[in-house]
View 1 (spheres, rainbow, N blue to C red):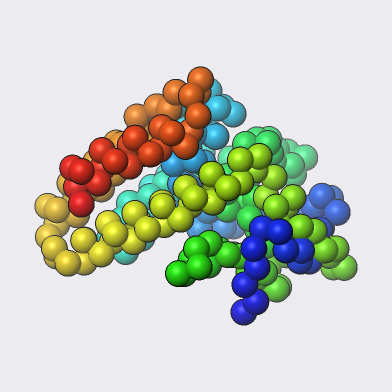
View 2: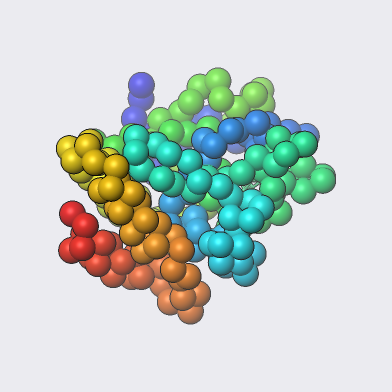
Amino acid sequence: MILLNSNDMTKLGCGECIGCSDCCRSMGQSIVLDPYDIYQLQKATKQCFAQLMQETIELHVEDGLILPSLKMQNGTDACGFLSKEGRCSIHVDRPGLCRLFPLGRNYDEKGLRYFLLEDACRMPNRTKVKIKKWLGVSALPQYEKFLVEWHDLRKGIQGKILEKQSDEYTQNINVRMLEIFYQKPYDMTEDFFMQFEKRREIFISEML
Ligand code: SF4
Ligand code: SF4
């Protein structure tokens, strides 16, 4: 596996997905949402977490940790944000995993790096694109820092759940994690990353 950083180029260009929406369909619960995604969805839809839960997102469990993911819709098995024309209706604010595809993220002692999922995108003759441009996130250094912190926090929670082996502890930590990072609405007039840092400090002091 070749690990890349955001200044590297790799075969990502797929002609703006014209005629294809494969990675917005039949994805099960694999498009997991982080707090930044919820901030972006809140901005794009003007809906709070509870409202999003009514239609476009759902909860799933990953190694004891409850996390939201995009919900494939009954009948179409497509994401609720996919338009009839097969385009993303929230493209500018789409979740991180949607931006990333067909890349994966690798976390190790060198931080966050990326790798190409060779056969994930079916478009032939893909062109080389700089990863930074592909992701299209304006504050990329802060975003990557957040992703590393969020990844570490998730691993920390999953480690505690495994260590404690207690249904009550698992329930309590999940309830608090969902409240602090997802359910409490974000202030759209304030920078996300600062809000995340404050919430992270509160969560760590209370639960870890
Ligand atoms: S599979 Fe590739 S071409 Fe199709 S929608 Fe996804 S990224 Fe675009
Ligand atoms: S949010 Fe947009 S890009 Fe992501 S799966 Fe839904 S329609 Fe596709």
